[in-house]
Amino acid sequence: MSGHSKWATIKHKKGAADKARGKLFAKLARQIEVAAKGGGDIDANPTLRTAVQKAKAARMTNDAIDRAVKRGTGESDSGTYESIMYEGYAPGGVALLIDVLTDNRNRAGAEIRNVFTKLGGSMAEPGSVSWQFARKGILVTAEGVDEDEVMMAALEAGADDVVAEGENFRITTDASVVFEVKEALDAVGIETISADAPLVSDNVVPVTDSGDAKSILRIIDALEDNDDVQDVFSNFDISDELMEAATA
Image 1 (cartoon, rainbow, N blue to C red):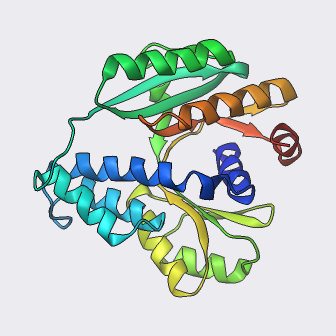
Image 2: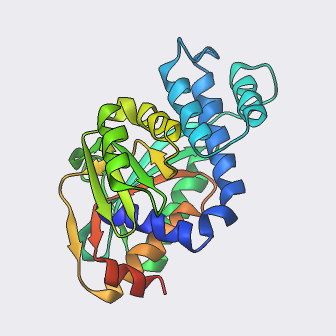
């Protein structure tokens, strides 16, 4: 997972996160819309509450969130989306899970398979990858924050671990409290550049070949660029030096 959080941090530094904000908001709105089909009350619908918290953590506006909820509850026009989890492998034996919300299963499947075919990965049978993943809360702080302040605020709010990653800190929590930890950090002025509850694997695959590193990141980039793909989860670990070289 550390490799994946490094990748998120590097994309943020390069400005890719800002350029992709519109695409991110569209994906978050789709998640809220689907969750709201189970009811528009966030107190009675934990799936919707998580989706809304995730959107707010990404600084999505309240108006945009409200519109997505209304589409989901039928108060305004909406599409019909199906949730699918695709599984695959990137070079070096790196496992990938691709979380999809789509209104066209055939199109989504074909486009994801095409990414693997073109960029050197392979699709996997259902269950062959997903068994090794479980949800955890992961937060990454901005640069320049005080380590003692991060440790105190995060651990008091229920975090399990705080680890330095370059100039940033990666905070691990139970998936159920990730947004409570973010609120605690916000309250003391500690900025986070990401806060989510991804699927994480304890079976981490070290990547030491520069060609494999570039191929893995190209595959993840291409998958994340697909409008139907909500998240891509992986188990690679790439050193800081190799990550910087692969993204140069």
